[in-house]
Length: 196
Image 1 (cartoon, one colour):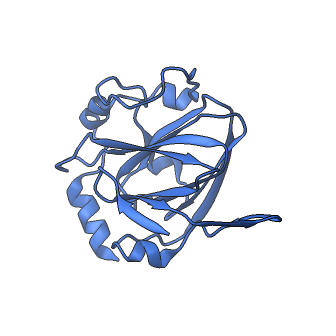
Image 2: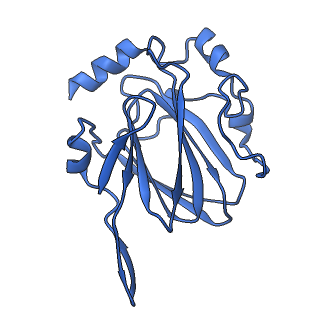
């Protein structure tokens, strides 16, 4: 397992080491000690799994801080473009993003800390995404920014017909979410990171 920082601070990509033979393949897809080695943490509160058709775009989702919701995302089947956006007001990289392709054939995972927004686009039918989160789902603390906000300039492939949920299609832009006071602050997030 190798871990390296993404362009958005407090997010990482983890290259996984598959082991296989004539029987199939084994992948150790999560290790807390690897995250701890770079100062990241993920107290496990819930595990989620989705299956998506090509073009399903889920996100940009984030939770209010505290407590926020750190995520560790893995794609065991199919292929996604996974995107992390810094939505922490006051962060020097506010509005910055990074994108990583997660592919079942070349296993890797993405970690993102509390206060960062997350989205993924399924690039193949039957794509499965499994993710571990640090706090349980609580609808009153969950928010979304429109994933097609032109100001963000996210690198969604032009050859994929994107399908959004009603909630994500009605989401505010990043600027609107900031005006509405929905976004976490860097100060809140730094306090959260220091707590553990």
